[in-house]
Figure 1: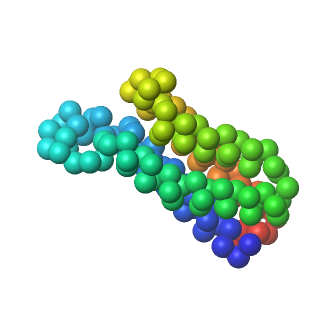
Figure 2: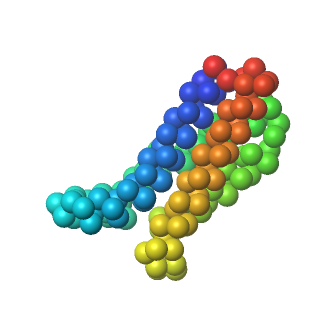
Length: 129
C-alpha cells in the first residue's frame, strides 16, 4: 500500500494522456499538416497506451479499494477500462471515427474520476503515500 498514491497519480496521468491525444490530435492535424506523417493517429497508438493504462489502473484501483472497501470505485474504473479497450479494438467499426473518439473520451474521463475518488478515499484511510 506504500505506493498507492503514486499508482493512482500515474494512472490518472496516462488516462489524461489518452484523452489529450483524442482531443488535441484532430486540431493539430488541421493546423499542422506535417502531423499527418506521424503515426500518432494510428490505432496502434491507442493499443500501446492500453498496455500501460490497463495494468496500472487496475492495480491502483484494486489496491486502494482493497484498503478502503469502496468497491463501486473499482467497478466504475473497470467499466471505464472496458470502454477504452472496446473503443481501441472495435470502436471505429462499431461507432465510426467520431463515436470511437467519444467512447475513448468517456472511458478516459471515467477512469480519471475513479482514480481521483480512489486517491481521496485512500487519503482518508491512510493508505496513500
